[in-house]
Image (cartoon, rainbow over all chains, first blue to last red; front, side, top):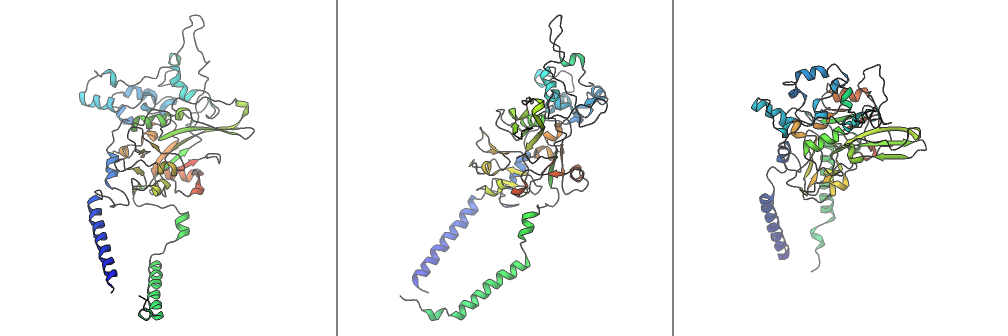
Length: 169
Length: 255
């Protein structure tokens, strides 16, 4: 074999060896175990903080409201749909076991007109109402901007919840 | 120096050629690659293989899913960072299509076209399709985004270099660069909730149960029941992304 070929082979061998060593050092842990990625990244993604508790945890304390709700049109709505994420609220009660809940953990009460409008404002894309049947795909719609806006004598604005009980509308 | 031709004869060339070509033929016959099957059949993982179903007929456009996603996953509040959002499609009588998504639908929708001009109108909730042949995974130069064995497309935040290739590649617009972290961010199918036995936040919160979530490999799952009983379609099927987000009553106008 000519000498220049021999030299080339040795140069290549050195480069390949260097590459292998560097790869071993620089390759992140668990890379390539399941594919072209760090297998540990799946673990890291599961470590995130939770915010929504799920409806089961509400039943422990608020059984009466859930019973009310199960009789009305809103029976399939979960509590957190309107009241917002409640895991911290639920965990606090579990740990401390008292009704003395700090203000920061009291859940949102949707009492303004705009809260109801999010679902019930009339819109052509929403499914048209049918009052006689309870069907999951039907929703009662109203123009929240002019439906019984205020008391005509005192000019006090009505809230939706003055007439409708949101847990049993 | 002239080359010594006698050292590598024609006979040697054919010998070496036969060995190389023959070797390739034999190995490909033992493990055949069916191009047509690869292109048409979506891959099916082993064990759990998560998919999503959305019933457009049931969606009332309340935007609670978009809101829940932001709260659960600490997505920036600005109205252009979304992992999950709702669009209102309005098709007018003259055929023009209007697509609206004010703040992703979180603050509710206002009907912008009068009733008598509307041919049809509907809401389309959108989110990551968790494609089985994801374009975003294919373009990542460092392997920071990947499909898990359960069929969830995830981002490795500690490994992402923020090059934005995947943001460009996603045909559904489901990725954004997180303004504080500087890395790409997307729907994780709330894998942190799944591992604790809870549903993803947007599925948990949907008031009309328009969103169905389940295991495609389990014949008894809610999702398979939904797929069997409805005429379902994915968005942009011609792109062959292996999308696992199936819509019922999807109009061809939806892009």
